[in-house]
Image 1: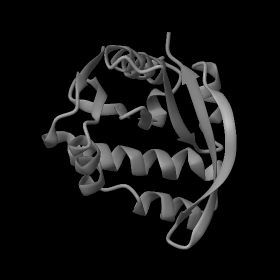
Image 2: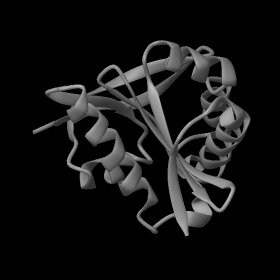
Image 3: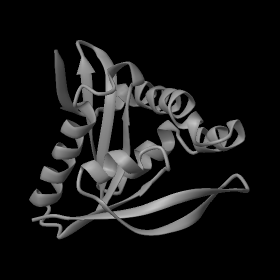
Image 4: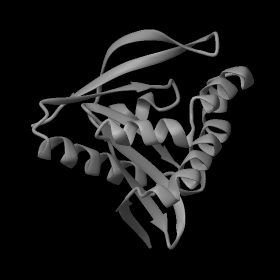
Length: 154
């Protein structure tokens, strides 16, 4: 049974490891090894702590004690939505996005935005996000294609 909680500091390392696993196993169909390594280098406990210090909140999905998903909101930006590939298709990502949207409503936001990878674009479209523009995002000297998306919150 999957349970959902708010991320606490003792799960930071697990979170970073989950994100890196998803990038390696899932995003590799759309990005080169070099691009995946650049994306992974952008993930760290320190960067996660920075997001929390900026007023962010992250929700996690647990299968008993195993971390299997994460999704958050920082300001009006959806941040770090990842689900373990072994748990793909079980509705975990959708549930995490509902939690993020509910948090956005609590904060009285009119819309939420995100930068999507090519890999995740279809998922976000199913969640009601619309493409606003395509842009290059530079990590470690590499330009990666990112898809900027937005969803109105009612």
